[in-house]
Image 1 (cartoon, rainbow, N blue to C red):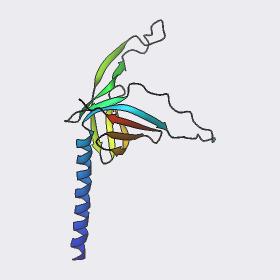
Image 2 (image 1 turned 180 degrees about the horizontal axis):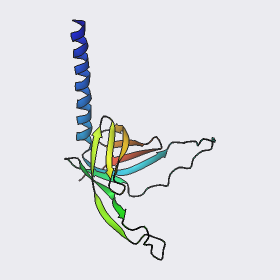
Image 3 (image 1 turned 120 degrees about the vertical axis):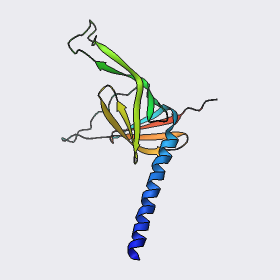
Image 4 (image 1 turned 30 degrees about the vertical axis):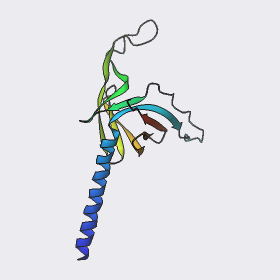
Length: 150
């Protein structure tokens, strides 16, 4: 009898977890714009404070069903690193567009970075109908606000 109760509790716990993930998936749909950014102070091996990463502009996402999203910035691929123009910029760059894929696994949002051909993972600290707070590698906490169409 005790084993049946333990099995029931485990199944109940698993069932509750999957509902929470589905809830994230339904709440994330829509357009999100960047609101605020906080830097978490980090120290190097010698005890000195590491400088924060440079600020990023035009952050924001538009999440669609079918696990696809659109970013407010474009992805680029450098085709030939030896071709540099007179300003010191790479001249052989392909614009890959703004559309990409995303997935939600447990409490993490993963967005595919087409420029580097890898998944970028963000811990979902908060996700409700109007706010989304993401933790990026325990370095940056980014807050987004939902765009509501009138």
